[in-house]
Amino acid sequence: MAVYTVVTAADLAAFLARYDVGAAESFKGIAEGVQNSNYLLETTRGRFILTLYEHLVDLQALPWFLALTTHLADKGLPVPRPIVARDGAALQMLNGRPAALIEFVSGVSVTDPDVPEAEACGAALGRLHVAVADFGPERANDLGQPHWPAMAARCGAGVAGIDAALPGLIARGVATTRDWPDTLPRATVHSDLFPDNVLMLSGRVTGLIDFYFACTDLIAYDYAVTHAAWCFSGDGKIYHADRAAGLAAGYATTRGLSGEEISALPRLGVGAALRFTLTRTYDWLNTPADALVTRKDPMAFARRIAWYEHATPAQMLGA
Image (cartoon, helix red, strand yellow):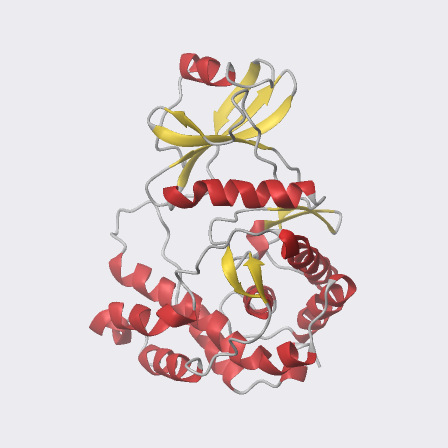
């Protein structure tokens, strides 16, 4: 269970006294997630998630994350809203950890998306990109294109031990993305909109969650990250053109891509696949065997690098 900081009944009662959310009726730890301590809370006035932020999260950026999700909720997006305490702040302290009480949103994350679900995701992503147009604060992408050569170097000499093809795929990805389309439109982006971060009910998006990799970057790069996450089989061996067409069709209904953004999609796709290949490679080589985190196969995204290298913009849109 992803609970690192224990909250007793007395701790919870004192914490809830800071809010106008009623008294606790049910309180239990949530198994999902590995970075924070999460609890499902039911009170006399509703359901909430209590999150205590642990050391793996950028604690200095927490006010930015909470401001972003508040902004998106205010815009009507299905984003869990941080609850403001009586002192006017959404970020509190609980048992020595920064903590926030967040709205509970219903829905189930998708494990193997179909075409209508990809289309619904595309429409939601477009709404998000439109909604952040007047969100002023910026946050650098610490896992973005300028950092990829250094991230590759940090993986060290053990990369070939994962797969003999992996060093070459990483090297080609770094080389391809040195020429980056920096003049494309930028905004606040999610940058991690995998299927497990989209909640759905009956094909309708009910929740966009986990904004802890959100940052300021190219809008079309965020589209490419979502494309890489939604349009391939889990192992990266099969490309689902029908899902890509659905994603593009949904996105076109709410924002749409410009001609310049479409032309840049293959290179952006290489970058999206490289980013997750690099973090997965580093984690594979440096995660202790007894860690709570389950290592993810970097080859699943390295294979996507190889596909994007030869893709056309039309293929990325599902043609």
